[in-house]
Image (cartoon, rainbow, N blue to C red; front, top):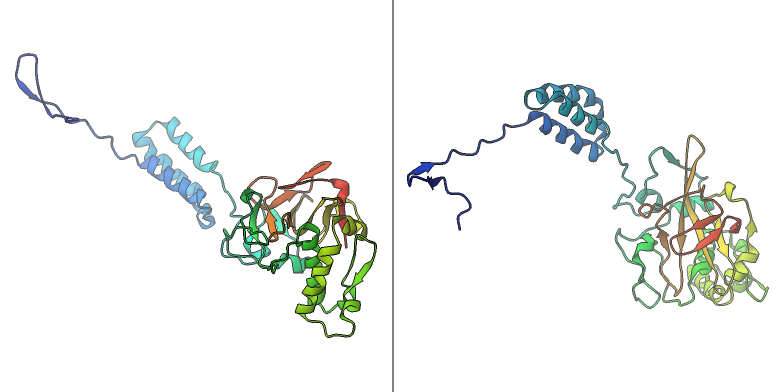
Length: 315
């Protein structure tokens, strides 16, 4: 069936030519408006200085084919177009290069070779990589994280929440050659010191891992909670730990922080979990970026666990 026949038969049986539907003239005003909206949505900062000039041109052209009221409305849409800052750089391969701070916030710059600087520089797997358990199976809750830390579990089934944090702390101290400071409390109450474990052997990454495998087996959130020192959540720093000792409990570590000129603070969290799995950067409280607001009230609702503000501790 034809959708349109330019010829039709009149009531008197004569064929008549139906006049073509008049085409709407090109609307320059709407064109310029859509053009500006596109620039703003792409966050093309170099075009912002041209805003008022182009807006004037927009009004000039709009008057020819739209009403003044419509033209003003279009210009207002341009002025109020959202200016979203890109928060994730997919090609970034560390925490500080993958994730941008929110608009108006600046990342803290810790001292070189500090615990905080080490965490900000943790290596990440390619953007979009999924978290795997120790046996290679996929973590089901893919909405809980936005990046995966590029550190192997070596198939260890005990590499869970507190274990991941102790592992990060030990590898940082090892990198700084502060071997005697690598010590963790077992659930039994024993302090297990790396240099004692070495018994005169040269420190290597291989014997550090064998030491950590014992830590994973005999330490937990219960013992780490006792080892760490409590602090006020208002003084949160990179490297601090939210921890609830228990069987099971849970623990997450602060791996980044940013502030604005008014003193507002946002922070980033990393965790492993049960069953043993890759260390991951958690999705923040907006459900999209990795940032959490420090002004979270009495309870911190992380992506997979809830902590009290009184459960913040430090090494």
